[in-house]
Amino acid sequence: MAADKISYKDKKVISIGVISELTGLSERKIRYYEERKLIFPERTGRGTRKYSFSDVETLMEIADRIEDGVQTYEIKKEMTKKKNEKMREERNKMIRGQINAQFNIRK
Amino acid sequence: MAADKISYKDKKVISIGVISELTGLSERKIRYYEERKLIFPERTGRGTRKYSFSDVETLMEIADRIEDGVQTYEIKKEMTKKKNEKMREERNKMIRGQINAQFNIRK
DNA sequence: CGTGTAAGGAATTCTGACACG
DNA sequence: CGTGTAAGGAATTCTGACACG
Image 1: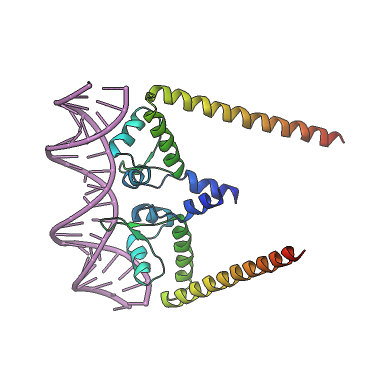
Image 2 (image 1 turned 180 degrees about the vertical axis):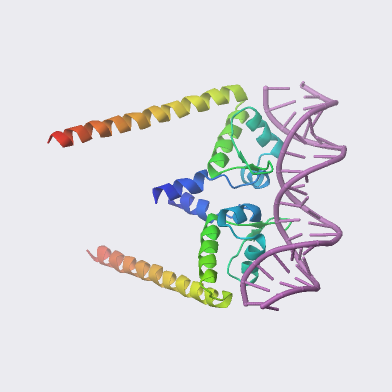
């Protein structure tokens, strides 16, 4: 159930034309942000890019940062930082969970 | 928030080629089920069909029924019936909610 | 009835490049 | 650096039709 919801948001099924409409960004911009490693579409068998709803959100954030005059390289650093913070959080949650499990076993 | 989740599942953004891959159905079949009013894609400005993740689920159900030898007309009736049941349920929930609200006001 | 296929056109997407700055 | 654009090719999608049954 929960896995289903994740898959809708992250499943790469949207073509660049629709992404362009959804984000208001030109296809040129979208391809350029990929070149700068800010976005990672999948490719179909014959090379067409496919994006997810998550990618739409990421692109909106990128567009905001660009508007603020931030360079793609800086944006990439920001995004990496955010991702690491999230991973640390997840890890801590897991460790806490395991500690609790230990206590429960001893009871 | 809740509205966001609905929008991902029901947002029509997927082209027929991807839908074909996702469902394993030929494009011919997918277009035919539309002709028989079982599925309702949106169209982009220039006429390209766009489907949602909900449509993927609906198509899988249709494929199952077809495999059972059920005709499209019957499938349509089944789907209409199911939809009506769901709407009755929703309505009852709402009425119950309003009755509860009435009681709360009197308290 | 449900589905495959060949047909021709229109729209989409792709890449590499030139341009401006 | 970020983005527009013209260029040419390849892949996608669309419709209406013929076929089988």
